[in-house]
Length: 338
Ligand SMILES: [Zn+2]
Image 1 (tube, protein in one colour):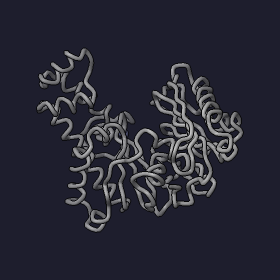
Image 2 (image 1 turned 135 degrees about the vertical axis):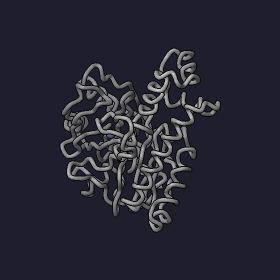
Image 3 (image 1 turned 45 degrees about the vertical axis):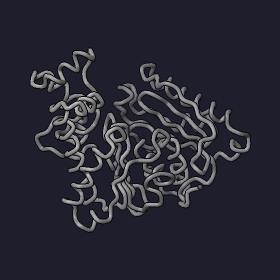
């Protein structure tokens, strides 16, 4: 099942997914299957040099574990990491999820030198979009949007078959659309952004604030029993058990997401919007259903009729499989970093 899109690598690639808690590496074959994989914890507290050394070690380990003929055909290395990053120079710019020491850190240069293969770096959401485009829910689309709803909310946009980069390679930050003019502060410093209301971190903060007011006895009792502050998952459990305050917080998160989707559909006129991330996966149709209804009701008719709003298909491996698209597009000259 090699992707019919020639912008995906027709040769095997090395893939690396640098996450806030785990680093995962793999040898990925052109059909999207994985020939070897390895993972380790992200030792952010040991600093950027330790993390880069671990990345190189994991890539060497998966290369050593792959069959000889696959290793001989390796075309390049696709690396994804949380943003913001500078794809053109292959550096992390300022990555809050990894810690304050991760500022202006070269990634592709040391990795390419150590492995003897060209390396390309992109934001995790861009690589997830490429994975879904080649092998998942956005297969063969020319106009597509990928959104992840997890600890944060991120996104990436494909327009007329090309990745939308923006002047600084940072386009697609859908999590920072304003959905509530008087809403809570966002981690980025803005107010009322989608991420502040619908993300795991935003929901946890809203739950803590509500518990502190003393006006949410059910949630307060739950937090006391757990001996910690509540997560978005706790809120989902509380809502399922009939807690009205949890239902109100999650209802607001769903309305904010739906409002943002109306804007995304009107602005980008995509064929498909793919929604991934652990929170979206857990919520399923409870998140997507109201968003579809809002798009049908409030977006322009032509765009609303065109678009499919669907869950991501590739799950945890999306950042690895997407490396085929990253290396392929780099070779074909269509890459957000160009
Ligand atoms: Zn923001």
